[in-house]
Structure formats: structure tokens, C-alpha cells
Length: 84
Image 1 (cartoon, rainbow, N blue to C red):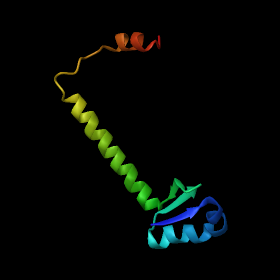
Image 2: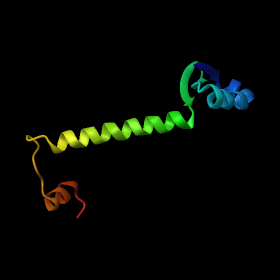
Image 3: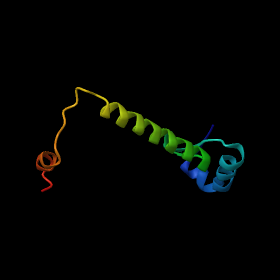
């Protein structure tokens, strides 16, 4: 893991990208000493997206199988959300 200030990354952007690509190293970008962004590889991004999708699916399945959830018909939901 490496940290660059925004000024440093302007000067060394090619190096930062190279490290992400070749070493699969996350590169944190800092502004005034605070981490504000991260450069990650495409593979890491795809993995994060898969994990998010899996978590969403698990949450949906849990909700669908919850016998305490109230069933609301479509028309009532539209009225409640004021989309009619």
C-alpha cells in the first residue's frame, strides 16, 4: 500500500498506474494529509463488484424468506411512494 499527495500523484501518475497494474498495489491519494481516493486494479474492482452483488443477493433472499415482512400490493406501494 502506498500513499501519494495529490501534488505527488500529478508528478508520478504513470508510476502510480504502473504499480497498480504490475504489483496489484492499492495506491491511496491524499489531500491535506487525508485519504480521499484509491487507485485499484480492474481485477480488484471486478472482485469488489462481485462481492457487492453477492451481498445484495443474500439480502434479497433473506428479505424474501422473512415471514414477518408485510406484503404490500403494487397499487398501495405506488400510492405510498406518491408515484401515481
